Image 1 (tube, rainbow, N blue to C red):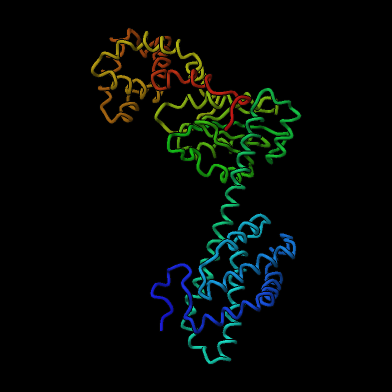
Image 2: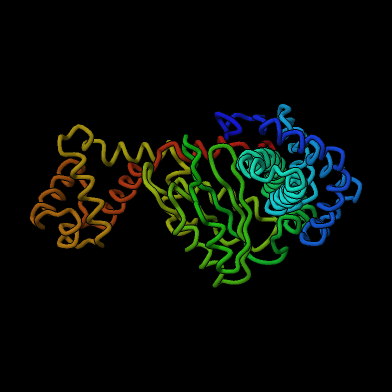
Length: 413
């Protein structure tokens, strides 16, 4: 004997001879509710700690038990009580596991009562045949309650994240009074006295986190931080206690970077945190376009100078390296020049980097001199070549974009 042809159909009813037992149990809903509520409060400390009013807890359990019995009696599912239960318990902070356990307790209480009634009427075998359908109904209700619970938690998290974003914007705003900024630090869980780093990480069109796991890495070092998406970047403030934590925080950010990331210089006053945002954005622009990595402000002053003066940088590039643009081997010459600088002027090391013979490196450097009129052997001319080369590797309009970004006072993450 089967109860349904398709047990997956919501609201499918138990076999009519057994369904009447579930319907009769509707008259004992209050008694079963008292039993379930007592079990919940005795076995789930989370409910006690949540301090749900007794009346509210009793009422939500009762309407759910009644709805369960009606579904088991063959009536269409009424899942609104389950939805309300999920929202209520999420609102009071009851853990999701405790919510689901309450449904299991209700199911067991109903099943025990039904076993007793079926035995007295010699219908135990019929009841066993509908057990999967009965627990399927309980699962449907508990799943709806869990979905409603998650909706509340997700919405609360979104509101919390938005509030933190607004506070972070205010913290990075130069116009925010220092006293107010100190209060924001407290609210965000950051120390009011210490050393701060501001981080700017580039977000691409996918919206993927450019610093996955950075918060966990910092917490592992005992360093607190707060983060928020802000336009086309992810911005963070990191609070450190000493030089060791500052150095460790920089390493954590570097290890997490999956995009271009800029790290400000060390900020020692709450009043200067807004300056850190500009430094972090400039540091980001010092990471070559199309590449991945973190750059700390102040570690490459020439790069900062170039990205903050885009027009002059473009002029420098054109003046020094313009002749290479029309050369068929221009890209090879630039790569060789870059390798030579990275190798600290070692032709042999540059050849190893480029996977070519050292004579090839020497030949290409000679081509650079012939086309530009500048030799890497002359310090002043080598400096011009290096500066022009860095300009080609960095986004020429980087500083223009930095300056065009909204200030903290005008931005809404």
